[in-house]
Amino acid sequence: MLSEAEYYTALQNVHNIPSHIQVQHRQNYTKLLKKQIKEYEYNLKYDNFQPLPYIPYFVNKTTTEPTLQQLIQAATSSSEFIMDTESINIYKRKNEPTLIQIQIILPYNLSLVMIVEMWHLPRNNTTCFTLIKQLFNIIFTTNKIIYLWGLKDELTPFVDFNLFSHDQLQSITPINLQHQFKLFWNEQHTHRNRISTSDDILEENCLCETCIGKKSSEPWSLQDSTAYLLKEYLPKILTREKFNLGLDPHLFNLDFQERQYRQQLTNYALNDCLSMQRILINMKNEKFEFKFHSKKPIKNKSFQLSQFTSDEDDDDLFSSQSTSTFSKPQEKISNQIISSKKLSTPSIITLENNLILSTQNELTMNHPPELIPSLVGLQGYSHDWKSMRTNENNSNLLDHANVQSESTSNFNAQNEPKNPREKLSADQLRQIHNRSCTIKQRRR
Image (cartoon, rainbow, N blue to C red; front, side):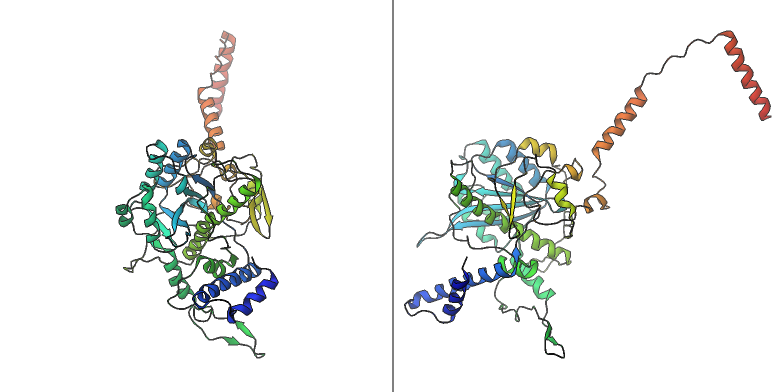
């Protein structure tokens, strides 16, 4: 990030390129300066991006079979996925593919986000490799909706890792969220004349593409979309870093600086998917119809993503789950959540106990919301957790503790042995008979 002095120097140089910069390098130099200026201005203008609650996973040679089976179960149950990729630049060669990020969208804006480390996969003849391949087979089926920020061609270089084939890529039709966002923005922000007050002060600026300086043929970057729509800063300083070095701290013995650097790269990779999720929810809340090139609207086959609301009780709700496997101490600096511990694969036992995923058409939680494990990033953003309790569609969400106690009490009541009656004497029987006769006479 530029300092204030460097920022003003960059502003001067972008319009007055120093003479020592060769002509063939001037275009790249100008592009670099503009990128640095944008990073500085966005960081100054907006709060840092805050993701919705998510559970992170590394998928590599250290991932266990039970964890992969759990991810397969989640992918089978879900119908919406967000995908992104990372590559590394090699001098005078094509970019080398390194990571595939896959976000499995769950109900109530929860999600699982996987970072598949292509340079650190298990051997092809292992069970774990077969399970990872099965995971991609499930995601790349026609009944799944996949969102990408760009074209599916960015997945083609990853075919060499043998997790999926060219035929599988040809069979899917992912939604280009980058293109859809451009349509959405133009739909929401048509050009209008600026309205001035009597004091010649602009009441509101027009946000159409022309007025904000974006060409009609220019695609929206994920950073610009996050800034203009969400009013948050999504850092892109680490775009050209080495994502192939192994982000999972379990892969190697690392010192503190190495762990910290890998955590920064991990957050960068995760936030690409998580920012797309926030944008997607916003578009859905505005009733935007996602279209293919055939102009046919996309029907939402799965659950509706709930709108954002502000609820201060969320932090209290989840901070009490400090003993959860998913819980990690957080330090909030400049409105950004930074994990102070390494990102590790959650315990499969805890996952099964706290978030059992159904393999039916939709996911249901087998515990009330208070028992959901603490998730990464949930302190950085407030969410509508009350709707989880009041939504009319939540008939499947039961208070299992109460149900269990009620069923137990009913069982005990039905099976409780009755005390045998003691034998009555002849005088007692006669008294009972006389009382019954007296009652009958009074009724008459």
